[in-house]
Image 1: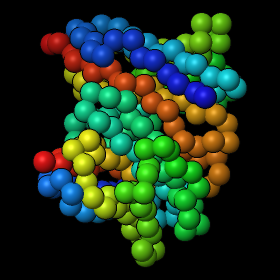
Image 2: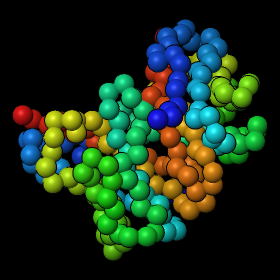
Image 3: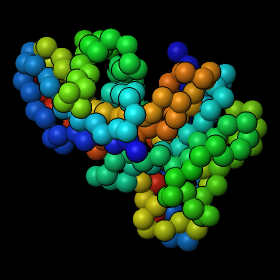
Image 4: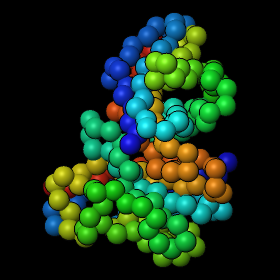
Length: 113
Length: 113
């Protein structure tokens, strides 16, 4: 069964460093999403991406964040200069045709020290 | 804006007992409602969804949920808990045509032998 994969499963970084979280969506999907969950809080929407551009972003998704689909398979989330409050679990999701639901990856746990 | 509230961050049940997880929603338009499950070290897996058809929705693994507009609720139930049901469960909502999901805080289920 096709699935969304994410790497790494856990990343530890120093405050101020750049991190790139990677996702491989399901191969025929066209819509891509990032969500995050700070420990003890709700899963929050960050950004949606379609046709090589951002469709929608939340107020969390400021200039420190960017997304990219560098090739036909990967979908990345970059945080340019990490802050302590960026520590969270980051989930990638993808969706196929209009009306289909999102399939989620296992998440990347980001720890900023 | 749409939101969901899950009552109870932690539920403990005996094996064979009823599982009841509560979710109430707030929505300005008729909502689409979802329950996701997350097993340890895995992604969010869709259990079931309500998209304005039948109000009683059956999902995977013996779970079902009933949409009650008068109570703005979408509670998840399973008649007989199994040890494998131990996981975290998330209720989520979105508007038709808007695919970003708003999640509840999650309920962790433990099953006692």
